[in-house]
Image (cartoon, rainbow, N blue to C red; front, side, top):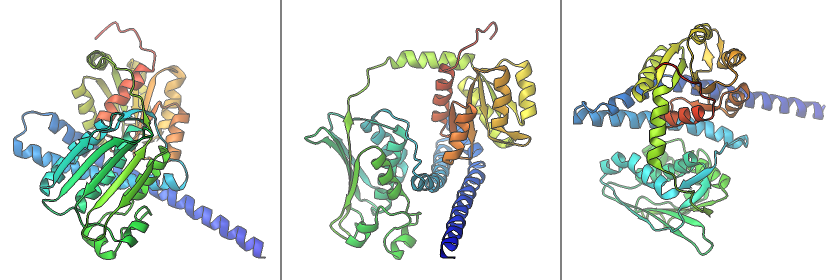
Length: 392
């Protein structure tokens, strides 16, 4: 009887866990989908040099807050991946100095808004690591965001790097903010914990950033720690990562010219049933120089494919008459080598695995970073056989 009860309890718990994951996947899709056309529109506006200065600032405010909303959704999904032991990394040589400067630039308006002085002493001779640039940037973003959040107006934040005697890369972020008592330090890297209720109410947030940062640092075979002299004494976060040799230099000018030429000749079949997303995405792709044809269903996509010779399939997964998995199966029956990218609001690990298994070269989660999208298209095209063009 006891054994049967244990088995029943185990099955109930497993079913609840699956239901939770399915709910998070659906929730993230529904929250992400309307953010995509908004971000794409803001991207087009920012690229328009005719906007007045005041409106440029408004656009940046909107984009920054929408990115923050997307980051909160990503944190929930990342936590699920960490719990399930499925946190994917795409390893390459990454320059931490460049990533630190990029994050500081992205967060500049918040820093200036609080009149915080940010100083950087990036003195590490070996600043490259073998890692996932997006995830490493996420770690730095989480720590700098915390420093800005808990530093009072006109405060000071210092970011420094150096190499230790073993050649490892050390990154330190110091602030003169509210600091942390010992009890907060003890629970800092646990999910959903932010110290006292008073701090949580005053500063907000989900309490996931540090837990995710520790998991990401661990995945890169590094260490992260936090220290503080106590309340009101500021905080110091230290990240240690194995340093690596920099990659061989490439001719950036030649690469950009090649990318520009491939954009001019590349034809993209965009399959998206969300009208606003399809309209703005097509405008953005056209702005970059790609030739675009839209379709809002599998049947419409197959009709376009029958009469139009395209190089890349950029498809949503949830479609009114089936799925993107069904679509790529039918496309590949006639064009087995066509490049394909999934662009979807479903971002759980099983969604990524299904996309790869179905034949998509890459999986991008909405709302997509548009520089990342452009780079992904270039990589997908480079990896697929290119047809000989007889026309323009």
